[in-house]
Image (cartoon, rainbow, N blue to C red; front, top):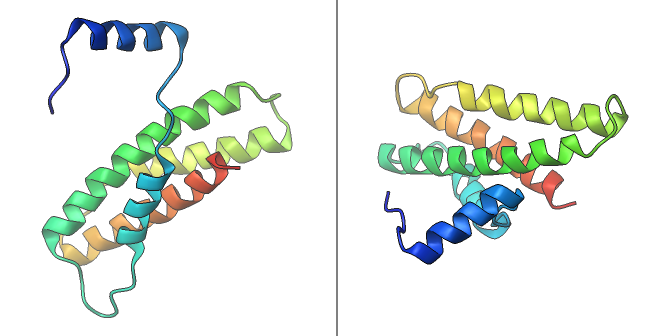
Length: 128
């Protein structure tokens, strides 16, 4: 992974961290990754390299969306219906991220699809 070390980029990143601003989520890219992960392939399993690539991308998307969800839940009144719904979703994302793919292509594909479903739902919630 290459990090831009130009002075302007570092200053922008530092300013973002200090002000709490983050880059807007790229929901179009997230949804495209989800579509690839969840596409119906019939009885054929995807190639192991594709499963690994999509799983890594989905994990990155889920981490970025989790940060946004955590930010949103802090702005809600505790113990309201909306607060509980976001907390439940946050717990689901954390649980999915804590799991591994297991052994074998079948299990890795199932894990990728589970991450895809969670990412799709979280993207929909964040887009409301």
